[in-house]
Image (cartoon, rainbow, N blue to C red; front, side, top):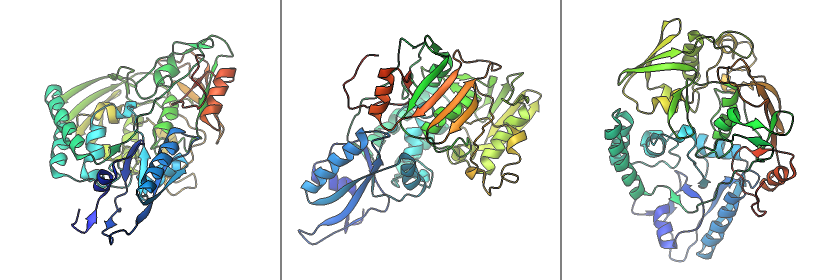
Length: 445
């Protein structure tokens, strides 16, 4: 900071801190040195509403009250979750933000919380370095761990980078919250919990069986989906639904390891070259075969139209070439250690025969604005219907190489976490999809 300004970290040090979730400040926050006794500029703490997460707005309220006691006019500003993403991640239009980044599958590799959160290049719209943090030493070490393909050497670099990031404290962790998952053990079985997702994991989706009911698993959701467009998706909540409909080449297992999925096998030829063999006899939900042409088209399309979640990773690719009827060769511009878990394990395969006509023949200028209201994928569940803001229903795709053990999943939006808990307790729903934080006492269902 310049000598006539005081930064957020310095202010928190003098103020004695606060209680809350992970808090970071907007990149443009500068506190001009006032006259003694003058007020600090008013600020807002952006966070999600209680419908999405009752803990975060309460934490924001507690913090705002704490700041007011030391003379700083700070207001809690709970807004819709999707507006949080839009204002903070895409527009950088905020003062302070409470955010919770759990250990979801797409964040399982340490590169997410090192390079993507701390590298100065990621201070961009759509990036994870929301506050504009910049430190040349940290830039160097997080770049090194990202490129190191030897596991033991990379682990040492990761530990060193974590120490430096901890010392920098560009984000302040000010609250730790319980993450609760609930399901009716008298109605469904074979639930597979997973880090960061609890009982709402993908492995639960395909392994759970219905003991009592019509074969469909009734699932509660805290907030409506914004999109079913796999190219435009950028939040973990959207990914949790889309991965039922769309396959990826790899999957992150419940224990954090990776396994081939739509890819049958792979070979790391050298640090910048990967050979992939695609499973035979894959089909799209409309009956068309899934081919290597579809796989190459997916990479090219997501990159051409600048898919917000995947673009930075796709830019690390040099070429994606078809080498046989069922084989693909991927060459990187430089070694990239998280390629399997973060890119190949997340990128949704899309059908060329549908998306090649988007946007030209569907009345939109940009595929990111395409509503995709009747999605066609190749995943273990096929789309049934989507009542926007209310309900999403998918049914088991029996021709999948790993078909689900239930008839399907019906995801219903409830107005609050209390309403979700009550629905599970009364038997209207079998489980919750994401975290559950009701204000009523915990119960065993």
